[in-house]
Image 1 (cartoon, rainbow, N blue to C red):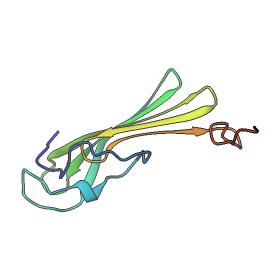
Image 2: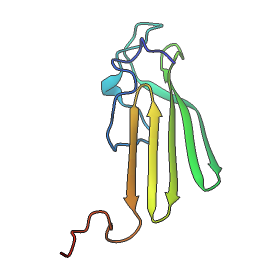
Image 3: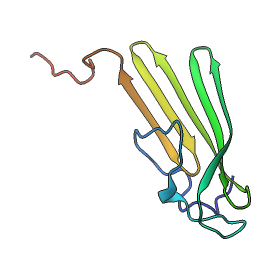
Image 4: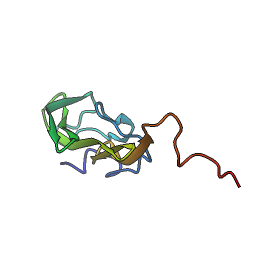
Amino acid sequence: MCNGCVQKEYPDRGNTCLEDGSFLMNYAGCASCHQRDFVLISNKATEDEDGEEIVTYDHVCKNCDHVIARHEYTFSVVDEYQEYTMLCMLCGKAEDSISVLPDDPRQSAPLF
């Protein structure tokens, strides 16, 4: 992975977890060929491990195939919640948890 290609390494993205795509606002340009062009996705792989889906791929420079960053996205269901995580030098780090129930018990107001 190349810290010369990104403006900030592993920026905090809150709860924005990307299964696909690139966070181009953080892309400074390719440190290898010095071009700022499209970022391609290569070596995409999806595996299912004990009920956890893991998606990995490389962000690469369109012009010289320089590897900018390695992206990892995970999805799992824990108890009654869908859990998402993302870790990537370009796209950042993020976590999210969403209830599978119509009303999230964590968001309900106490009765008393």
